[in-house]
Image 1 (cartoon, rainbow, N blue to C red):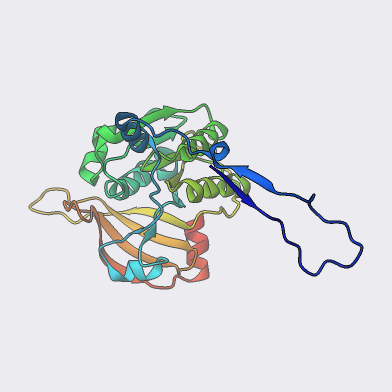
Image 2: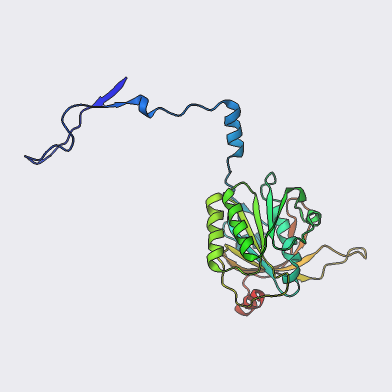
Length: 280
């Protein structure tokens, strides 16, 4: 059945030609028909493979003082975060890996986590005590920092991972901006672990576009029954977009809800000299 209408132009000046030719214009509905409906099994497969957005929400810590320093009351999901350290930890990457593992265990547990690095020295079972299931990891070997950043961006744009972790030494603002945009557009959380595995660290650091930037220092653990205590870190939140800096002593915990817990609050607002010291 055809639908027809008469074009009508009100207020046309005298002598002006009509914008449309006189007569009736027909629009046939069958020319704009909807695509055929997919069979049930194909529709179910499409919905299962369709990327889901994970950016809506935050990842709170177990301490309200930490959450008060973060925008929205927790670590924003679906955005880029930078984690670094100083000294030997900047070469081994052990501190950054342990800290981020405590966060990964609580981000979309049913989704895979891509870990991209130029050095294949990560021991996945070692992340289990920090709450991260090693069975979720997809290990990717890159050639250098440039390859790591490129692989991170591609993986973030796929939109199927719970999080993407990349071990990177050099990170300029343009590269970090591209990663942040990929996180926002596809709802995947990104973590950049600043690491120089061969000790060739460049002191010239550009401020990245990461939403939060963290600096870690290892501190002595508390012995229990003549046994070594749980790993502890001096954690400094040096930058939080929409939040404020802070410093705490945190340790790994045998708690699935909060694998990283706060044991001491050092300061709510570190001084400028302290921020420069943690930035390395």
